[in-house]
Length: 94
Image 1 (cartoon, helix red, strand yellow):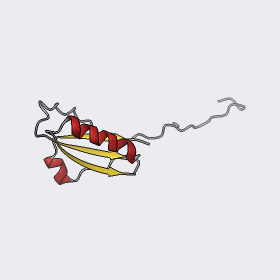
Image 2 (cartoon, rainbow, N blue to C red; image 1 turned 180 degrees about the vertical axis):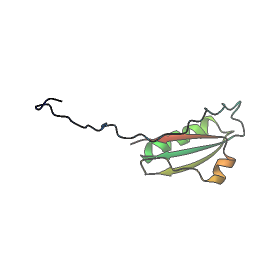
Image 3 (cartoon, helix red, strand yellow; image 1 turned 90 degrees about the vertical axis):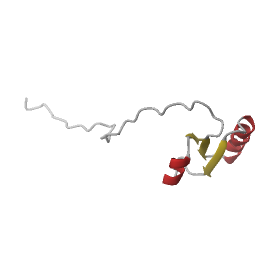
C-alpha cells in the first residue's frame, strides 16, 4: 500500500442474518365443512369485526375460534390450539 492510501474496514449495513428453518407449505384443506379455523388478528378492532362477521356469515359450517389483540404481531397459538386447529388465518392491520 502506498503511503497516502487509506484502508477502510466496513461493516455490512444489513447486519448478520440468522439462519432460518424452512418448512414446506401445508396441504390445502379439501373442504371447509366441520373444520376448525382459527383467526389470529391484531390491530384495529373495527376492521376485524367486519371480517369476522362476514366469514361467519358466509361459512356457517366452519367452527371459528379467534384471538384478538392490539399488539403489532398476531397472538401465537397455544400447543393445545395447534393440535385442534385445521387452519389459521393470521392478520395484521394498523
